[in-house]
View 1 (cartoon, rainbow, N blue to C red):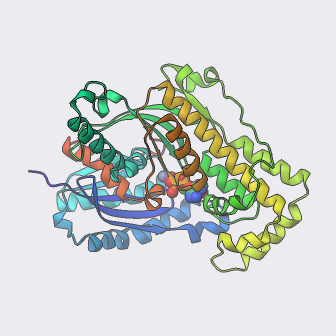
View 2 (view 1 turned 120 degrees about the vertical axis):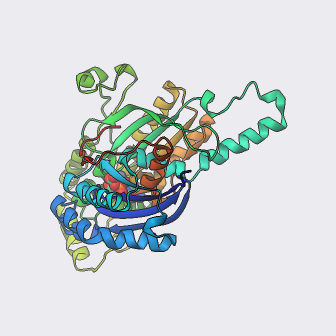
Length: 407
Ligand code: KG4
Ligand code: ZN
């Protein structure tokens, strides 16, 4: 006799977030307190400052989420919280808050892996489920097709790219049977990861070294269309699987593991600025943006010469191409029936256009979360908790932060 009203809490990095989601599919509220302004002067997240801000924000954010959902604490069926991966001190704020709430209300506590949350950001919006339902309708109307095209499960798993400031992972994910209904516990297998920087980290670092704002992704996204993406050739090393084999307990078959590497391109961009003597321009731009309160990418555009815009466009094209090539290669290798892309970098417009085009060419369905669900939020945490509530997979009272939790 369980209802499905879940309060999700997320505090793994620099957003304090709370959301109320019904049965993993209906978002009643989704509140995010961003700390961008606080970390911006440092060009990256400062863990100690993040923890303090989470402490300051967590109660107002949770209250706002309940208020917007028109719910009270007593209406809740469970409290879900991000267990990891993330910053230890930041995670602990959300976890301690969620534990206290669950204890005081005598409601179940559910621990959610942040990366599984990102995957659920896509599933939550049910684009794939709608697809599936449509397909089912078609099958029912033409019984002759039924044998050739079975359900989702038989067609194969989803290949998910989770790409953010902290992660660049590929997962094979098999999750739901039947549209809208409670899911069986998810089965996921890690089939790809970065060996150094995450893709979003590369966006952030390149934006910083070009004198642009933080976080860098949206700035590069906005400036890239003004440059020539073929101006600067960047290349990615093909990482040999066996080099990393011993570090990868999940890679049962290392030849089928995909590796990304984004630290080299950051160095290549830096070298390019040195060879082409761009330092003075970068300093001038940094100084000009520093005196604008709340600067936007549109403020940076007139401060960029064509060679800077070409560099930005070439960088973005190279990263997006590398992600696209490796993601679809993996999708093919595993016979994936669909592709999901999630995480902050999934907000990138060029990435969406180029992934969508390749998916169409291959006849593969593809789904992205809406822009607000691409970056960190708690709706995805509450959505990921729903199958766990159904399975009564609850967290112990001893739950604590696991900063390097794997999925
Ligand atoms: O998922 P997220 O909010 O936090 C992490 O879990 O890391 O992702 C933030 C990352 C940052 O690196 C940011 O620069 C990047 O996502 N990002 C973008 C865009 N919007 C955010 N990267 C490229 N293009 C964008 N439009
Ligand atoms: Zn994230």
